[in-house]
Image (cartoon, rainbow, N blue to C red):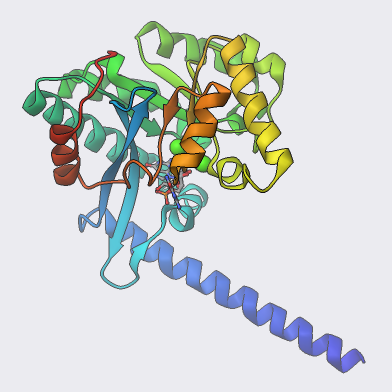
Length: 281
Ligand code: C2E
Ligand code: CA
Ligand code: CA
Ligand code: CA
């Protein structure tokens, strides 16, 4: 019996070790990735209720010659833990501002861009200054920018965050709450914070038709957001049926494979040239 326990402990330790080594390996590769131009941005169109594009969400991609295409869910947490995130975060902000400003120019039309900002990134002392500097250098309109933050940001001291959020708002930058309902949120927090948009997580949209609780979550998120005068974006919309039920519940913005996958900038340009878009900025 004790030998069995010892064995399984051994197997467990090995698995841990393998996971650890794998992460160390990924981290080493990630350190090189920026210098070697392996990181790039893709953009997923976001549609309004009339079916026009109102914006795009910027999503990072890593094409590693040694590891292949590494999903952001695998390397963003590692980047955070290893202290690489501030650098990657600056790369994201600079690349997005430059590429979107270029598209605005080519298309002679403004549209929104949402940038995911991790909690660590947001709390970083130099974050806002760098953002402002980049906006100035690229001449992207700050009104075109939305920052997507997760509700876990507000586990931190909300009162300490408020001045920063107010400053961001005062510049005309929008704030979107990502993955709403999956983390630690409180309703009083919504009342206090200058949030423009709530995002319904893909997991709720996925299960909306099979799981009554998921459907109720969706309905309630929409109702809460609307009561606070916010836009509601549903993420991960893959079917017409999902889009229609979400619309019936009062959701006014949509994003998902049903409309478009995240696209490299060249394909995004084509998509935008072939679709109508609303100018809301
Ligand atoms: P998220 O912010 O919740 O992003 C939504 C994810 O759902 C994206 O995955 C997107 O590609 C995917 N998605 C959208 N519509 C559909 C759909 O209809 N079907 C399916 N199956 N998937 C859909 P992705 O790009 O792999 O990103 C995963 C997560 O990694 C993001 O979740 C976000 O938390 C993080 N992430 C991605 N890019 C960035 C970034 O530039 N900065 C930061 N800080 N985090 C990022
Ligand atoms: Ca997001
Ligand atoms: Ca997320
Ligand atoms: Ca999500």
